[in-house]
Image (cartoon, rainbow, N blue to C red; front, side):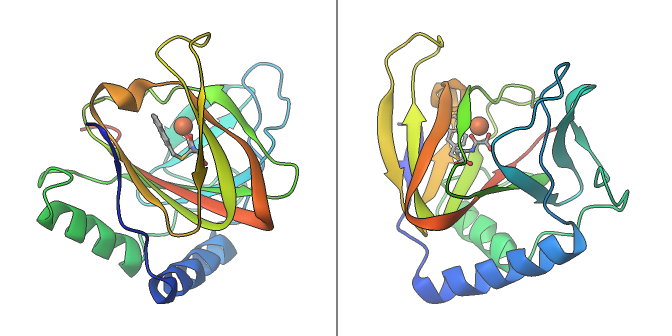
Length: 194
Ligand code: MD3
Ligand code: FE
């Protein structure tokens, strides 16, 4: 089993984490990524924290140490994320040598979506991805290993924590829409270069 759904983050801890993400976004403002080559806008906004951040523009998508607009380094991981990583290591859900190098902060509003894709540019595809959902519910789609494989829908509610590892980490997936609210934040913690 390589998609693990943890117990939800309790409301008090959610509020603290949302506050910490708010501070990060003041320092590293949300931006709209653009598709490689065409430059077309993605249908959501994002930022990052940690030593690296995921960015995308006409030149392609990549992990970069600086914010594409301010040019400043990404803010460090907030205490709540360090704590979640520590607990997941203690529970032996993620390996003890797991090295989080980035946390993508995706922000969805009423008309946002994220098309089917795979996350396969990280060096060690065995290293899990940790996803944390906050705010409105996301209707998440998960498919197979080919774009044309059948898709299942899963509702990701506020506080949901998913661990993606093993071969399931390489499945096609996307975010169809949000319901029960107008703002959703999704955090994905990743190891990239080790
Ligand atoms: C299943 N984000 O940032 S998170 C992404 O809701 C991304 O923002 C979505 O896909 C979002 O790349 C989904 C949950 C997730 C993340 C990675 C996965 C599910 C995954 C990788 C493989 C399979
Ligand atoms: Fe993804």
